[in-house]
Length: 453
Image (cartoon, rainbow, N blue to C red):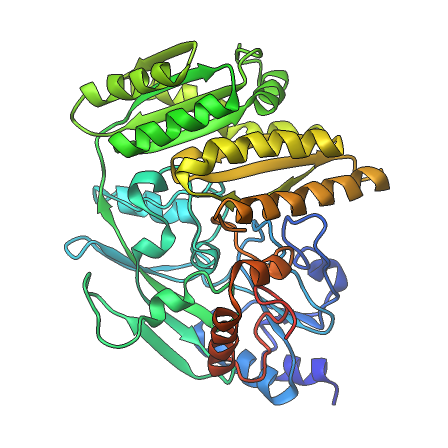
């Protein structure tokens, strides 16, 4: 009996081996990350079927590669030759929504937007909001500890995970955390699994904290003659105030969006900074606007109309699709301490010019989380090599400024080697020890995050 025959015999309604179907599950959106040919695709419907997959994998030493919606950009969901890709698309139920306790229990295939909508029906809010919130799954959000536009005030996905149900590589089920907002009984296994990119266990349920919905936001926009001035304004604002959103676009991004959407943007500005506040104190909006002008903004204006504010954010949301029209786009994801943001922005411009590569920078500026969007012609090998050089050099520059190689997208395949530069030898050994404790055979998403052992 072949491996595939046995797997089908054990989980006939779960397993698919059609090459045409599997092709759509082989990779995420990291265009240059390698992807192998899987043995099969599995789409379990419940925890019991996930357990059976894990038992099969352990018995035959077959790698399991968990997958959400495939919206990742680091190669974390890319298949390996001979693996079983485990898609959680069928485990997509909101199992519980407790209005009094302000939490929801969901399966990993639930979309971020679906939980937002369900919470809103009870006057509650699920705040983590990655840019892909309409198409990304909560399981993928937890696996990468996804951030988003509002995390400058409200935090990232991990701040909302109260507890998890997960399956080890040998098929054992375990649970972490619970219903309480404060719980320090034992090691914090929940936090350990959040951001582990499917390398420690297969998450099958999540208990997620909900919040009261905030007041409608007020919005300001400021235009700058230099990226560095926008960086200094950002640091000044975050030090003195509490914006609920603070986003940045550089000139290249602005020009791409204007060409795409015709929003009448100022194409001479080196940077646009858009911020929001959802406090009752209306003077804070004016104070943040004044901080921009003090840092060198040549134009700043604000509105308390939420609809107008959403229009002002439209350009930021259109940056990625606008740049996709120009070529293949690789999204870098680096973070630096806020005092170093202006310098990081300056270095991005220098590196792009040095390699003659189009780089448009957008940023969750209030967190120091910068996304250089590297654009190149996929049919031009020289352009691809130069783009790859820019990608790697920007990781080095971020580390030199005391930053990190990944702020919110994960390490996946494309940054595993640079994680070794960021962590010291003892930290790396502890990472590997944790991996061995959860997954002694190394069959859960091998090669991702920590690279090859």
